Image 1 (tube, rainbow, N blue to C red):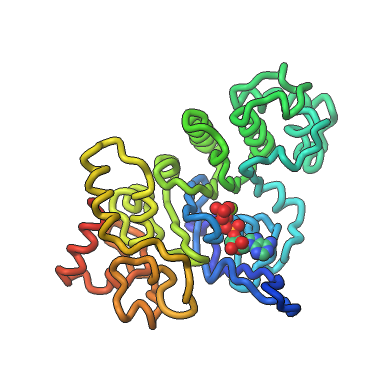
Image 2: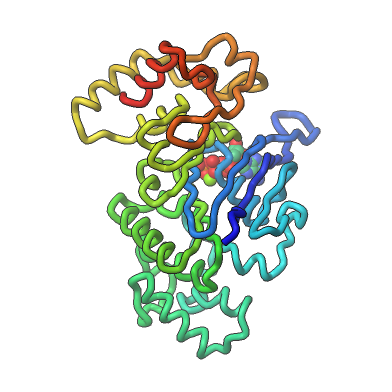
Length: 342
Ligand SMILES: Nc1ncnc2c1ncn2[C@@H]1O[C@H](COP(=O)(O)OP(=O)(O)OP(=O)(O)O)[C@@H](O)[C@H]1O
Ligand SMILES: [Mg+2]
């Protein structure tokens, strides 16, 4: 087996052009500012970060829904960025997607059979009876049944609709499924059921996932690696367990802090720490230095003038924070320890 990643994203930039304020001139807005990520066949990369950080822009660039303005995206050895948004059928077949609410854009008169068998109709030579049989099989695979084939999307709960969307995305047994917040609209127990279903299917079919979520805690079990985004930058990346249990970047730590803790003592310590931290500032003055500097409680003079590169982190992966530059420095170690244990 080759060691070549299935998905190889290098220095990707995604830029939108729009008018801001009263200006008649179109201004560029850089939603993704040089993201580098790799994903191996059969593995899951969790991509997390707050709203507006650029997660969907990366997903949409991989899916060919928006063009890369710089950098490259290679999938299975093919340079997708060179094709702009016109992927050949063979590539489209191998990359499928599930969105937060894939049904909102569908015609309500479509049946579940239409939805699940659509990829089969487009990409295979199957006749209607064969497609129907395969759609029934796919529904059973996601714990629904053939009886559901003639029903319409509005007759299902949110969780069931995501099962149908997953069945459709898996119909062609693609190599990669891009999952953009597939469980964000669901209640907690349904979220876990869908994550478990994805887990099971991935291992059975050997599919790779690019899994986008807000909640690191929810996706860390299923992810092999986690990448954390902040304002268009990947600020940390590494093996899922290391990123979850010993976050190296102050922003990753803040993301984990946002997850409710069941232990009241830990919860109390966390609240106290939050009071000591500077208030959440709105992102501003991001033109130079570290993108997180205005919200970071450890920001130093250097963070305002220099953008930190990615530094290797003990236990695997890397993070872009100057606190990692000098592992022998005890003050830094204390800060990181504090950041990892609170
Ligand atoms: N078509 C577009 N035109 C202009 N700006 C856009 C467009 N799509 C996204 N943006 C902007 O790009 C930035 C990144 O958006 P993106 O949707 O990639 O973030 P996200 O991390 O997926 O956020 P969320 O968690 O809310 O889905 C945001 O500031 C957003 O407003
Ligand atoms: Mg998004």
